[in-house]
Length: 320
Ligand code: ATP
Image 1 (cartoon, rainbow, N blue to C red):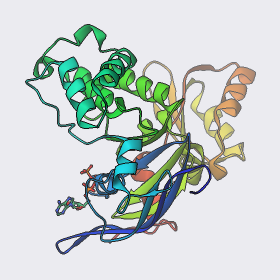
Image 2: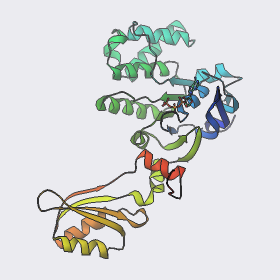
Image 3: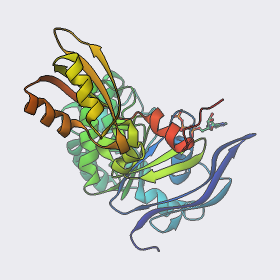
Image 4: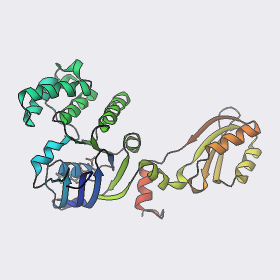
């Protein structure tokens, strides 16, 4: 078994009738990592996760989880994986505790152990108060927690979550993300999402999947840096227009700028940096030095689409 590696994917390909969903991807995940699989709809995230969780076979390639082969040692792999599929299929007519006990038994836990583990995961996922409620009557946020509790009930080392926050409201998203972060302290986590901010908030490393291929694998910070010149800063400043123009022209760190009138006697300055530098400290210092009123200073973050475009077409050529 490979030291420290929880997931080893090598040359994995999955073809559905006439369509290649995953095309020869390779990646590893170390024990204790929290890795995000980022990609838009149809990128191949769910397919990859289903293969990892032994839900379907690959067309070719090898996948090992905790050193076990997902094809030939599926039972060992299943014991170590807690998988929450997209759209999380629960039994809506069952009560929360009853369902989790049923799932625990299905996963091979004895009667006594099931009871103990269900109590632990109910607590862990903040479900104790609704343990006697019917699943179908719960909010989407609670249902998602039930799905997580299900994934955790057999004490897996690796948790695989397919789009765990999709369809939740902002408050529910925050609480599910917090729960994932808490779990990440004691588990290895692989999470799929199409939302860039999600991986920034939760993941230590990101794999960008596009049309079945991995286009980039790095920390969220390094991926942002890939964007370089996209760190545009917007500042709303109250100052004479000519002085502002002059100032930005003189500032070597500014590649180009655009000024437009804002509410009151403020100018909205959109400033693009040279070499991806963060202009905010400079702008703040200049405004203070010259006695200008500054009421907004924000740096735009590149979107997933921006990063895609950069990763897919590194030289910036337009798609025809
Ligand atoms: P989404 O977030 O929309 O689920 P995804 O990144 O998870 O996207 P997959 O569900 O893995 O992507 O799908 C990858 C590609 O494979 C898509 O083009 C999809 O239409 C196709 N696909 C997925 N499942 C099947 C299937 N059972 N039969 C045929 N094609 C499939």
